[in-house]
Image 1: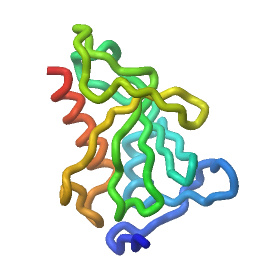
Image 2: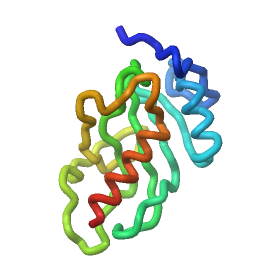
Image 3: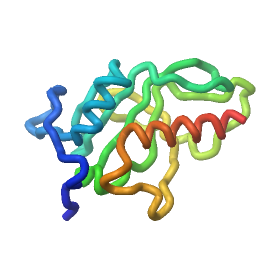
Length: 148
């Protein structure tokens, strides 16, 4: 069983839930979402905490400037690192070239999402230090890399 991080205490979020599960996110993540990701939604799906960042800004080199980003967090988050992320609508390179490991489509929260199959290396996620803000920064770096 994962322990709650003492550095980022878990705090209930006022977002609506599916079913009777109470979702929790660390206070630092709630602050980040409130300050920097104003258009967001938090929900539960298949025992995962889902965070949708609506209108997530995409760097140049893609077929759109913004799309919705889905993060699915395991019950042990933030001690258990996030894994992969999803976009709706699907994100494509502006030049039409393919993007590795983005061809799978999955359904969550009544929507169809393009999965970006990316996995953190062992030790890359630092429990008690890394947050949704650092994970979205990693996503932005990967988007920039894939657009080149």
